[in-house]
Image (cartoon, rainbow, N blue to C red; front, side, top):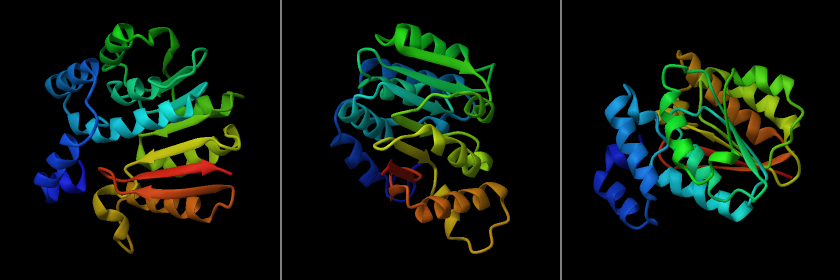
Length: 215
């Protein structure tokens, strides 16, 4: 959920009505996510989806990695700018929900470019030798700092990496957080800010996106 959605819903509606339109397949997926999942707020959502779409179209990436598929909304946004010979690998471990993203991936015009894997992301990153142009992480927060350490060697100059939920409903302002997820998100944000190999900015979009570019 975004800050404006919670604190100022009128502003949130304004932001949505002044963004480019949502493709029909994403409208259907968003609706079904709210109908059939117990935590539909985990979906990337309309505004964030437009950001991912624009970045993908600007970059025309050949190799994209997504950690945390959920129902596949962000995946489809990220595919929109793929190079003709490009692909996206999207990772999740929720076997019970896998039918839903698979359904929409098969419907998508990018079906042949989507590699959906039910695999632990840390395991995948330790095994792969691939280098990624664009990476989006929206998964278990307790592993965010470790994902950053593992992803860094899999990037090159110009690679873009995005971590979602890095404001964590404002909990990052807690001086001594008790919640493990909050501790790790604060650690991640500190690691990124101190890493001279990246330039970054935290975008206050929805629950915060840490936007990084490899120098």
